[in-house]
Structures are given as C-alpha cells and as structure tokens.
Image (cartoon, rainbow, N blue to C red):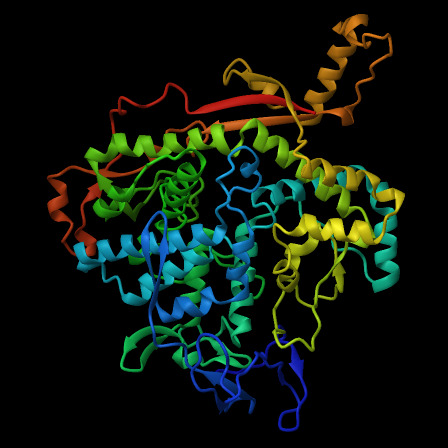
Length: 615
C-alpha cells in the first residue's frame, strides 16, 4: 500500500492502531459475509507503510446487464457495479432529469440515474466502435471502462429539481448580498449555536465540480482515495472496503488490471471538460493529466469541448423528446460512423491548449463523414426545439420560478437547517471528504448543502416534503409565506406567464444588456407613466398598486448550443476519399475540415432573445 496518512480521512481509535480510518460498517448475514454486492469473502490486510489494518474484499466477478427503454440492453461490468451501488449514484434515482417539466409534460418523470446509465452505455458503444475501426489509436479496455464510468458519474453534482437548484443558488447569492437583513436572525443563531460564521456562497455554482466531490465520496465509501503523489499506482487504501489491487478492469480468471489514481483523474477530467481545479492537487493543473496527448479524443465523448456534440446530449435529446412528446429521434448513426482524425481547433481563444499560442493547433478529435452535415444540423436543432417547447415551456418555467421562491423562503429560517452528519452509530456510516479542508459545520442551510457530500446525499427532490414537515413541526407566523407556496404547489397553482416579447439580436442589443432588475424598473416606470387611471383601478374603484415583488422578469436565451455561432462549423468532417487513410499511424491520420457550404436546413439566425414576465 501507499502511505495512508490523509487529512481528509475520518480517524478512530482501536486496540491495535491508535489512529486508523473509520471503518465502513455494513450489515452482515449470519455467516459474517457482507450482504449485497459485491459479496466476496472479506479479509484483513496491513498497510506496510503505516501499519494500519483494513478489512477488504474483491469486487464481484460477475458482469450484469439491465434494460433501458431507449438503448435496450445496458452492460454493467463488475467495476461499474461497485460505483453504481454507491450512495452518490443511487441518489440520482430521486432526481428528475427535467426538474419541474413534469408539470407541463406529465411523462417527463424520468430520472438522472436513467440518463446516466444511458450515457454510460452509448459512450462504451462509441469507443468500442472506434477501437475496432482504428486499432492504431491503441484504445485499451481500461480507457473504455474509465470513459463509461465518467458517463455514469457526470451528473452526480445536480441538486433538487436539477437546474432549478442552480437557479436557486444564483438567487440566494443575489438576495443575501442585496438584503442581508433577511438573514440576520438565521446567521446570528447559527453563530451562537455552532461558534462559526455561516460559510459564504460563491457567485457562480458549477455542478460539475460537485460531481467531482461526489466521486471522491463514492471512493471514500469503499475505503479508497486518489493519491496525487503516486499517480500510476493503485488508489490509496484509506479504510475498509474494496481491495485497491482488485478494483479495476476484470481480465478474467481472477485477474484484475487495477485502477490507478491517474485513471480516476482521467474520469474527472472527462466530466469537467478541461484541466482540474482540485484543492488537493500539489500544483495547479494547466493541461490534461489522465491521458497523454495522443489520446485526447477520449475527452470528446462525455463533454465535448470542441463543438458540443457528445453522448451526454445525445442521450438526453432522445430521452427527453420521447418522454415529452413521443419523439422518435435516433442518433445512433453518429455512434456507428464516428472516427478519430486531426482537426484544427475551432475555439482557439478559449481552448486551454491554444489560447497561449500564436494560432490554433490541430487536435485529435472525434469526426464524422461529410455526408452527415445535414444530420448534424438536425441534432443541434433538437436542442433549441427541446429548450423552447419543454425545458423553458411557460408552465415549466412558472413552476421552476415558484420552486426557487419556495427554496429561497426556506433558506432564510434557521429551523430549516439540515444536519451535515447522520448518526455515527448507523451501520451505513462511512467517511466522506469535503472539498473544504477543516470542515466544521454541523448544520447547513439548503443553499450550502452542496458543500458537504454527506449532506448533499440527502438533498434531492424530496426536499419540499422535508421543508413541509419542518413547517408543520414549528407552525410559526414567520412560516406563513412558506406554507402558502407549498400549498400552491400542491394545488398546481404556479406562476403564470403574463407577457412575452422577442428582442431582435441586432436592434435589441442594448436592451438585452440590461439586468432583470433594470428591465423591471423600466417596466414599472412605464406602467406608472402610461398605464392610465382605468388600468390602475379595479372595476369597483379600488386602486391597484404594482410592486417589484409582484412579478418576475426572465431573460430567455435560445440557441443551437454555441450562442450566435453555428455549431456545425465547429465540427470537422472527412470526405469519403480521405476516410481510407484512417488506418494510418496516429501521426499520419488525415485532417478533417470545416464545412464550407452550410446545409439547406441551416437557420438564418442561431440565437434568439426573449423577455418574459411571470406573476
């Protein structure tokens, strides 16, 4: 074993070692075997460097499969089963993929677990197809396994009601900054009870970073940890769980090619889409660490930084469309016909590799035959169609804005704080690291749940029921507004869209630059100036007073995936003649080109701006 000294491990005392990582206790059967998968016979091993003794087991040797309503059969190898059984992945069962969209489209109740399994499956199919067609790329079974796990884990950082939670965090940051008096009582009681200040919210929340934290959580639950000081060694053993030497690619006959720390950094990089910003890395990362330059195309599968055509989007375009309105889109032809070739960087000003160089460089990237240009445009058109008709449908958005207000109201009250740690006597307790060293917060508001994985594990779409129970336990007058929002939600009384206007991209540029608050103020001024006496009075003569808190301004931006740019122009295509060179050595692979003539189905504009009012 590598050295197991870790500041992020929870330590306990026993008779043999004074300090060793807290054991992961799981229920056992009458014969002493661990119940559930994997159920291999546990054994004691000693770390020669530290002297710590751990109870470890092998991962299951049985590959499995499961059914899926989109991709039919999903293969689950033993290493994936270990991660699939972890608490962070199982939490996705209780997160709806489309958040509040089920209020407009009743069948869109599919979960992030279904989506993640789908991404994992088609990522494996894509890589296996390229591996078979281009053996010169030296894609290994470990490469495919790692990218599949990245597909499974890429959404672990999503909060309740998916992107609604991110909108809530943005609103909470703004509200705490502009109206600190609304949080004085909560923060004072927090400070008095726990002796520390409330941790501040960042201006921007990235669910991808929370996904990386939850990966660390899943590994820690199995007694494992990434070791930045020994990248090419098996994972560091920090507690009871899976034997680090027996966790990896199953080679058959009991042989395993174990995961290294570099493999799990590669998995994280695939999710993040760039060099990691890891708090525990010895130095700041300026490039990919997980795989060498000649395998950079592997990073295109889950989060394609070049053009946005990746397997994550492919799965949810198909899945969301089918559940929302019975769409039968099938983009499997992209999986069948994809290959790797050289291509000039389409984003040299933002690419971490090109932005400090004189000009764009050529990347090894996933490319397609030139005959698929029109199909590619259809793919990106699906994005704007789903966003307009499903993700930002007026009823979906009304329910989402109301949910944000509900969470904002709950976040103001100390009674709504959630414990960061569960009962340590629980057999399901396991050590989980935070992204913050020296984490010392016993309870946190909903807006801070993402800071600590053990709390984040318990924050999902059931959060409204938890809030309601807290309100019923403490029926204080200060909770009346919160209870009203909960009751309205139960009665399907969501915010209504009352006005909508499309803003021209060119002639409306200056107006679009205004913030929602500035637009709201301008609207109120116009209402006061031009509304007229009749518009400001009811039929019985009572005066109508319109306040800023009576309505919400939403700036809706619809595009094909690359703002005002054509995403197809950022893809690279090969002619049929050049495809004959795909079996060449890596350094002699052909160069795929940008399309010169746009397909017939290309729109006149790739970006639309809309202002909507909800109340």
